[in-house]
Image 1 (cartoon, rainbow, N blue to C red):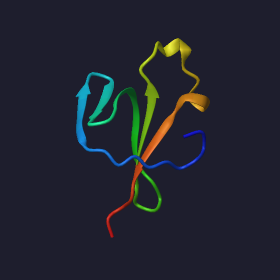
Image 2 (image 1 turned 45 degrees about the horizontal axis):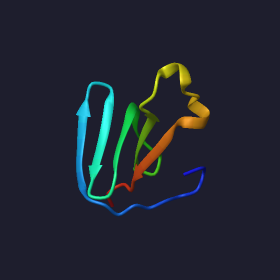
Image 3 (image 1 turned 90 degrees about the vertical axis):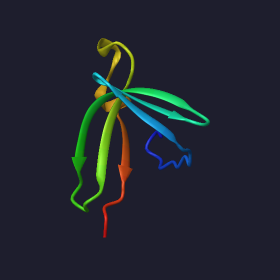
Image 4 (image 1 turned 180 degrees about the vertical axis):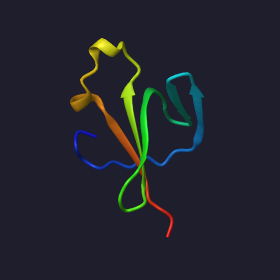
Length: 73
């Protein structure tokens, strides 16, 4: 968050509906707009998301959140 790594250990489900991704955990429910899914050079997976607000309010440089998962070794 804000260019600092964070970690949130929670479990739950992920719902995909149209252009939105919703994370429903035991402690949080968060809804985002899907932007992209990529593989990084090191083999990790990078998911880019925007907040679920009107697109005219989004600044990609400010609002993009990246979720990563380490590549399999």
